[in-house]
Amino acid sequence: MDKLNHQKRNLSMVSLTRKQDEAFTYLMEGYTVQEIADCMGIGNTGAKHHLTIIYKKFGVMGKRELLEMVRSEKVKEKKSQLPPRPHSLVLPRGLCGF
Image (cartoon, rainbow, N blue to C red; front, side, top):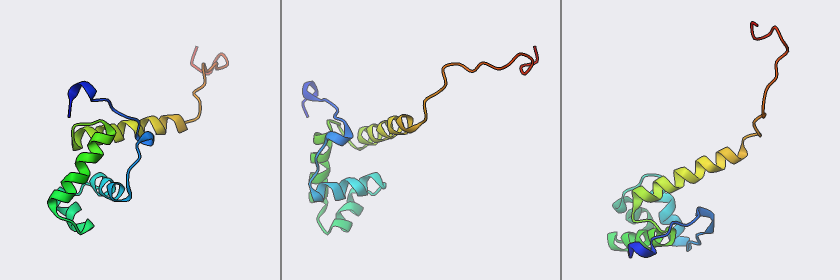
């Protein structure tokens, strides 16, 4: 992959085919290439081909980088679901020991 065109994409913006989505799901579950091939009923080369296209679509160089991206997106998603933090908490005098 050309490093100059190496641009990560938002997870929700990537469109995967049914087979690519299946391979992606297995990959996220920690399956090896051989296990992905076996589960999908295809050869090792076919599984590698699906994964290579997935990496290109996400703009990453490989499995490790894709996993980091997914974790990062999940953290952002969880943070966005948290209730807003109060700006300041003012306690009545005497409650803080002063």
